[in-house]
Image 1 (tube, rainbow, N blue to C red):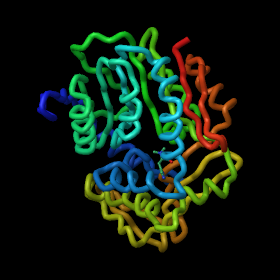
Image 2 (image 1 turned 180 degrees about the vertical axis):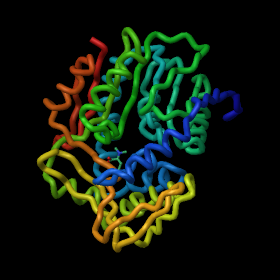
Image 3 (image 1 turned 180 degrees about the horizontal axis):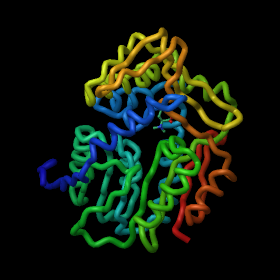
Image 4 (image 1 turned 135 degrees about the vertical axis):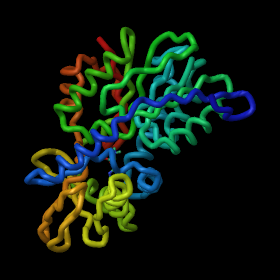
Length: 325
Ligand code: AVI
């Protein structure tokens, strides 16, 4: 337990992390004919900080649109959640959106944010704990894309409610999204519900701008994945030998983010020497943009029922209330 403020206490939980599995994932991705890296590796300390900067960019409409939806419909959302909820946030980041939500909830029983970036998780959990002194806060360091179990908490709660904002669900392939949401439904249990942010299809120019910002923050964020991998696994990617590229693939309905090798080069990872040709790409992230109908089908296949859906006047982004049926 960690003292977070005058009266509040944080209960830190750490899931056993299999560092070797991540190493194997990276190695596997770099040996594919079309190379790829797992996008969860964006989020070391610097990556999390860069992502926060992205969220404040003019071009990146997602964050401000979702926060405006939470503010505008907070009372209705709070009524759907009801009193004494255990709020479980997946990929909590700086918990900015959570605070908008928590401020509107009737006596939430406890808050359980889950994130891989330990330091940022602790900082934001401590901030929530000190602004909500009567709330039990249980940060869990875990990779929520893998199987994990929830820690025991002492507070009595009426139901588990998941909060998965930011359209991070778009970073999963559709089939993975179905199985991830299915696992989440099981974790939330009977009476459980999920409040999820889902980015919607729109003019591709708006999308291309959001992932190719003028200030180049997204480019730094993309390149930082290589710095993180070097630091964590001792590889020798030279960041200046790669260029950021992001574009909207209309056929697949997704943004694809790549790093492009500027020249022929060799990268060393473990005992392997991996060749990269000039112009060769490494896929670092996909970000699906769904129609309401498409996402509804994904949710239903995961055994979830779509209840209320809130969107902004331009219908760029949605907040969706899903129940376990
Ligand atoms: C976290 N995720 C929803 C972001 C997105 O928009 O797909 C990550 C991101 N990548 C580039 N900019 C932001």
